Image 1 (cartoon, helix red, strand yellow):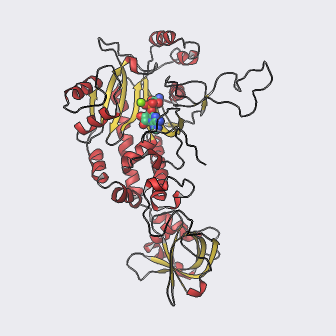
Image 2 (cartoon, protein in one colour):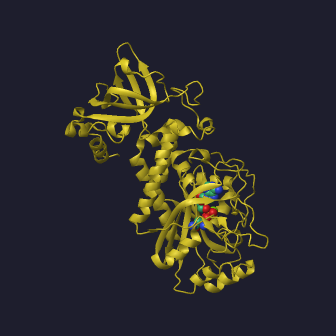
Image 3 (spheres, helix red, strand yellow):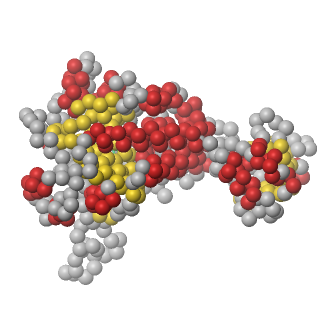
Length: 480
Ligand code: 4AD
Ligand code: MG
């Protein structure tokens, strides 16, 4: 909950007129106790925001003003003579007056205006957001420059901000070092060739000049993992949380070309279960924090966007996540009477329909699937040296409605095995530095990455990933 502490600060800031900064409406609305302590009715305050409704009666004007700090708007009560011309839904205003206790049950306080200044008018006829209308998310998606003014997108963006803070706190509270891994890199960590390559916008320079700005081909990062591995050579536990880019030609509801990934890496770890435990703790602790810090905003999604999601989330939070091997998962799929579009077979990747089935099979509880086929996974994963079904120590976390939320593994820390795998790929020169990490004070280690947008989809029940990111980037679309 927003505690009295932040309210106190905002009131204190606004204790003299004219106020140098605007007062957050949300905070003002929750100030019952602070009102009693500070008696702000003696001082003028100033509120800046956007008009959510205007109701002009014969001798009273009611306005609702929202400054983005909460779903709730501050009620402003004024003499109709103060109403500026062109004051409509959507316009921006600055209101000055006294904060008083409200006689209405729905709010603690209201603002008795002394002045109302229209800052920017709004043409309601052409404004895509309409008064008292609940716009569906796919309608709002057409207006990436305006949709943050709607209740659903503003709630989403507040949740996104709180979730970011909660994830950072989870890691720093648990002794992880936060590292800014580079966005421009010369490696393709996942080796899937789904990289965006960088090129100067200007001509390629003089003939004979190296065409590469960095002398080598450079890409937008697909993962900060390899750089985090460098850091766990000195810091034991490290994490990064930044933009990640994939040139996948997918229009699916779970893929973006630019998304945020939370990645953690731990040294002195030789059991996959330790990695799974961090994933589960991260999911549960971050979600608890989001639920307690923005219950109203989350409520909007659980009540209006995805009814039933609250119960599903509770199920995820109260149960211990399930663990099964890839081999068991394939057996479950093969035994199922369900007709899959892709026939499940050992050695083939799990498709979304398979992941969905497995989570349903587990009663809607998230499930870890571990030990995937060696041939399906990137070079850095630890070889289990088993057979005849050859696997690596990889783990994916599958969640209801989404499928894969996290992907992780133990890393190959044995120099000879890593070298021979890279030699077979013809990549031993490129990864010379990575091989050296195994020569100088190496440790068994591992980590994972969690897609931040998929995490938000999972807790809120949002179907399309494009609705949980401020400016979605996907094939054929880079608007703004
Ligand atoms: O499974 P991925 O590819 O794993 C890695 O990149 C590892 N190097 C991470 C690590 O071990 N440090 O990606 C991790 C997660 C996926 O499970 C998924 O949630 C998300 O990133 N993800 C995407 N999210 C949105 N759009 C895309 N195109 C995504 N690709 C992956
Ligand atoms: Mg993966």
